[in-house]
Image 1: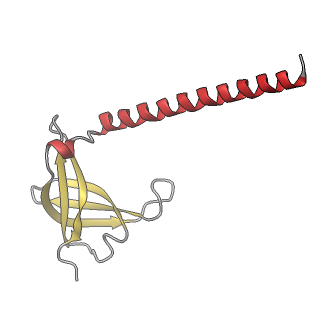
Image 2 (image 1 turned 135 degrees about the vertical axis):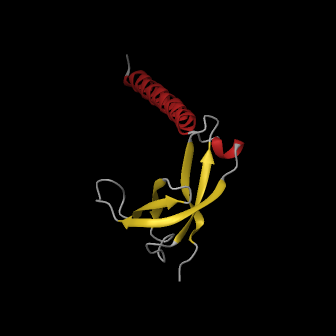
Image 3 (image 1 turned 90 degrees about the vertical axis):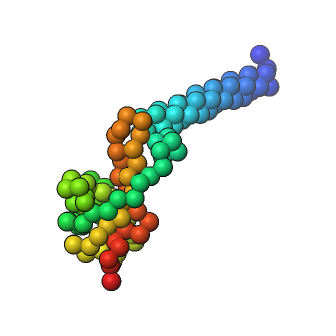
Length: 128
């Protein structure tokens, strides 16, 4: 075979393999996203709107870098019903928070009555 035919065959082979790789990678990413949506109850927020609940901030601490990224702060909140919830919050949301402050929390409930909690848009209501 001439070098032109060999080169054309090699280019076709590489493009075909690269195309198959991209196709498989794209399908894998789509399935990963669908699994994440299924596993986390992502649709719970669209079916059941969040409920605003409040509690008292009991503990604030910065975890080790191996647990979570450095900009994340962990909070422990005692809810008004007496239960405790541990939340992650970014430092800019809770910059004015101190122990004993009233904290706004969003409570999401999915179809299986499992609750997910997130810090509300106004994290500390009584901050000064």
